[in-house]
Length: 167
Image 1: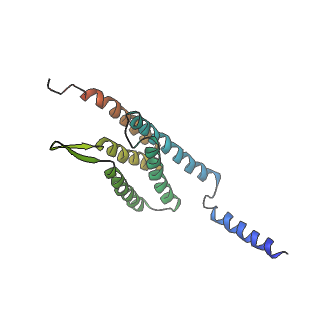
Image 2: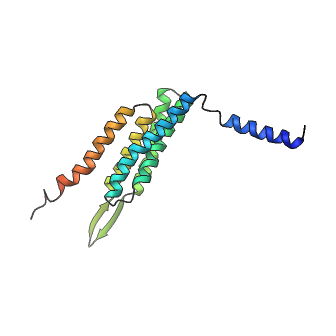
Image 3: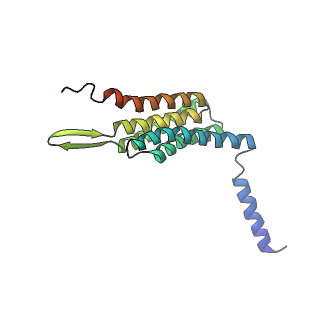
């Protein structure tokens, strides 16, 4: 046996072992489905934000939803309890809170404060919640919440535009 063949076989077997964390096609399908669904739902919210000219758009919302779903999927793959999963959820919430805080800008114009990005920050936070719902297997709730969020984002500006301003 050639020593280089042995090294190649060892490397190949090691890589195969490292990639064997999904025991079967069913488990792999679940992970792919969760990530794709999270991406689609987050993408819907992100598309609305991008169409509204906001900085955090399609890709940001897709990645936030997928990331949240993946953290919970990893926890499930590890076989953690519901109590341990709640710690993962708490970590996602805290981490996304920092991301959302970065989307908020405060400036002063002629002595008046102008705060922008609150809706975008809330959208990023809510998108993470949708990803968490997908990650724990509550896909129907995630879809329903996405629809409600889209209604809020689309109808909200229409309801407030010039309706309450004094002329």
